[in-house]
Length: 214
Ligand code: E4P
Image (cartoon, rainbow, N blue to C red; front, side, top):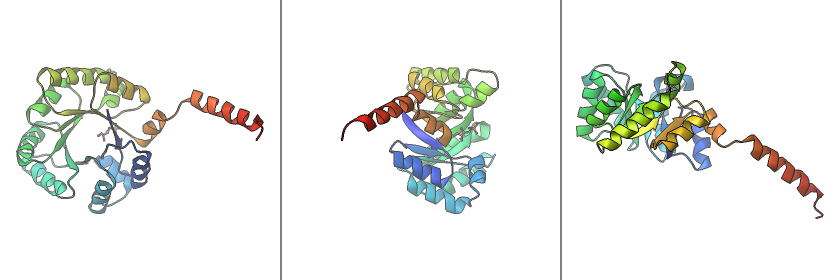
């Protein structure tokens, strides 16, 4: 399963890339706002740091405008994936962009029918937001299971990016049900590397090592 960082912060992207586990990056307008940077400078820099797809979000709401925006974003680098929100105008745009060879990530997905339509119009990626579903009283990962089954039933090649991940168990469940990718923030990614029992045993080993004659 591929691991993406959900962030627009250069320092975080550089650090995770250094861990050797970074397969891609997803950004969104909130991340860009939090970075304080101008997207004109920020987007090319992120794309140059990542050896894998980088999702940059289109913010237009009408198909023609989404397509124009996506064409500009796609010029930034070869690894750009244009994020398009799931809605009627978004689907129209994704179909046209797919015909032009522009890769899209259909985002803000909260239902299986939405994911089915995204695959039908040629989205390269679908992003179900599991944490937000959990917060609304649903089991977000059930949606991922449904999408996996639907895509397998019809041999859709759209890759599932499990998004809005809040904890390591989201990642485990995503991997168990065969999701292609998990995208998560830096804090959750750090949690994946940690376990209190690992800390405890390392502590004991290092203390005992001090007693070894040298
Ligand atoms: C994923 O691509 C999104 O950027 C992200 O997961 C949005 O959801 P959140 O803000 O609830 O984490």
